[in-house]
Image (cartoon, rainbow, N blue to C red; front, side, top):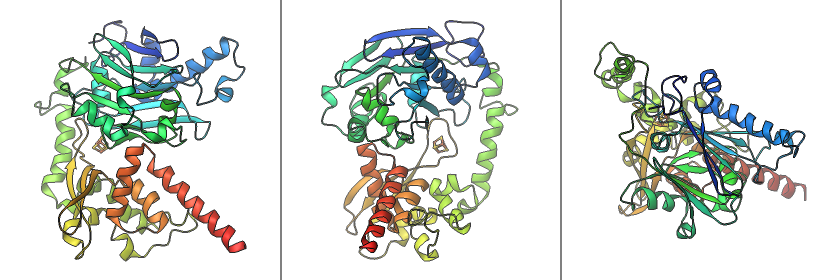
Length: 413
Ligand code: SF4
């Protein structure tokens, strides 16, 4: 329930958690009701507070044009992670959470969004938003509960990659905590490092992981009282058992499609994951190739890596070829179910590697862009990128740009 103000719209907790990693000061502030009313949480709310942060830096006299002048890898940059009034309610797809920052990759506005469960558990610790300021001298992680906020030494996470940090908090801990984590890419300030949430869900774009790394922040674990209730304006509307209610109607609309049509005729996100988009984008001649020099692919090549190929991989893989086994999965309260847990096995049935994805964007940029039409290989590259904590979109684009430049230089000699 919202604890600080009765003037807020329902759904908000009313509190912001502000952590200065340099001074180790931890502040709890009221959510500004005016800003809360203007934006429906998430990205808009975060942008308003991002603006406020840079405005205050100017008012302090340190900068004339703070957003332009602040080094994105300095303690004066900020990472603002915001939920929405609907987060952690019964509303479908209400697990999504947003991060705003100045992007180290573009020096412009940085914006990244993730599904999963972290946002839900963070909100249930009693906050709408987490603002991360300053820069710690040593690597640290945060542990946030309903009653405490701790900045802890991250030595214990030192040898772990991003995925292992997820496992450490989620699977190996008795509390099964949700966690945000960075990998080696973030620690080494790769400009396209991501922040991972929920193993394969990521705040992927713009270098959010480098902002974490520059602050020496390795992970943010949340351990809420999961019985925490979110206030809503009309409980009946949100009740899945109320046949006249919005949540029931939204779920039925999705389920009617699922149960009355053939899987391949239903929305491609549900039936094939986001990779279902590959065939469609290729049909429109829009699928990137050779660093966007062209969009030319053989249809038979695309059919090896599209959504149908992933869904049926164990049936279509040839003799002696690696096979991908696929399980459907989903984020918090989302009946779209576009998430795919995958395992790559060799032809003898031995597990080579496992993880999530590949998503459409990974197959497009890190696969067919580079003329790689081998789905198990792309999946394995995806798993490794997740462990290092790298955005697969910019990773693929960077390799493609390198190949183009290398070819140009080679051909000119
Ligand atoms: S399962 Fe897919 S559609 Fe649903 S919230 Fe997660 S990423 Fe989004």
